[in-house]
Length: 434
Image (cartoon, rainbow, N blue to C red; front, side, top):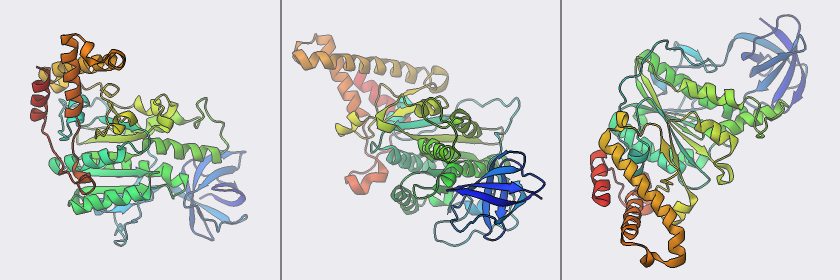
């Protein structure tokens, strides 16, 4: 095993010099005096390594001895995690007590995506969310990825909570929630909501929240995916994987990159942004035994959808739900921008001819509504032709139709939550546009 000494400490980055054997990249080291784990980020200069102080231990000092472990970061995997809240290291943070993990298999959280050879996906299976705007514009298909995109305070977390409530309750699938760099308050509200509705028994929660250092925030997503892969591969389960927030994952990786003095990319993010996002996204895949269906929220800095990190994450998604501040200001919930939301799964092969034809007609009406708004602001709605007035009225009715009361905010809104099945939703659209 490698053995070395700490030569320099720069915040969470430690320079370690080794006498003989060098550790491997991503190997776990242990500080002898404090029993603090370090993660090897890179090896340089022939006998030195840059290491990350995962737990942010401030008692580490220069000249302390560091020993190799011969293994990378590993977490135990098994059924004992169902119903629990854990951190990036697989340690419980819910105050219920320790997790009995002796004898459990362990898996590396930094493993590459699995290769499934010639695996062919089964016929698309639509999962009903009960949320009209999602089921119509961005159908939720088993084994695919959907993104909820928006700025601060437009309802990303609330919509995620509603999806967890509706799909987990009706499908019986095992749900995972990875809280990456989000507010502690939101995590607590989600936990209490799931607990109050008896959904914790089918849920595993990983949290690396705002108060934790960027190393743990950057690792918590990989930890959650590692356990999800175990249930998919070893137990053949279908997994619903919710990640809030993927942009915070990029931010955490960017902070670590800054600590390592790496030169940023043209967009100001870490130079490895593409591989960072790609590797995590590629692990959210399906196999012959089970599937992972992923829902990811993406914070948009300054409401700028052209941000390089937002664009990078979007490229990995099958569907994107765009939440708009302008729509939210009109009192419409969920505050979905019906024109900018899109899905590659909205095709006859997936949703059927009836749904597809309706979607084309609805999009045409919404586009016409958008183009007429400027004219109406100048000359008024009464000056439009009869056909234009009819189409404009239909579009307004559609916009209102796709608003909906949600179950998870019943206590705040005083309105009972609604679950609208897909057939009723399509009938409702047909009644408006006929």
